[in-house]
Length: 188
Image (tube, rainbow, N blue to C red):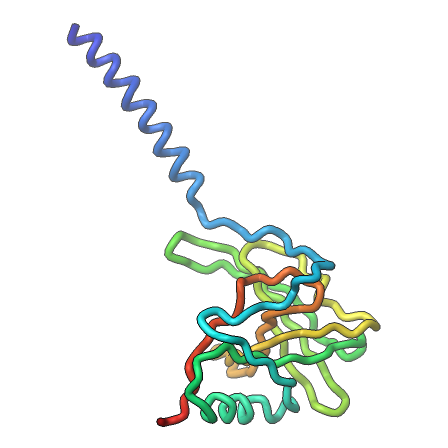
């Protein structure tokens, strides 16, 4: 009888071990699926508050205007700039990088696409797009048709460069559910 119990216990332990391995193996950091193009619902919403949309100011004024916008009120809302981009000749330095980072769920790959865009009357802007996983970002290469893009300023502390984080790109499925609302900084 003891041999029988030992045998059954061995089978149970083996099955539990297999189940644990399957569970742990399936819990790794996942990747977002490739983004869909041609979607009608490409605009993002405010998360935790309404979304206010303004036109992107000239490149040299983005930081000043962004700070004035936040300092002018106490309201909690998502603040986003919109801009029309067009012309492949206005887009330069297009590059895609996959960076690996450690997250609470383990190591994950992120795809980043960077490019410069020169507006003849407003100056040169630096854009960045990101998505969890390894992705081809050629859909961000501009053609002759203009596209509406929604962005938020992001200071790259490594290069001390102002980047415009692409929150929404016309026709492209959003990478996130929306832009987080934040309170304004005006003293009451």
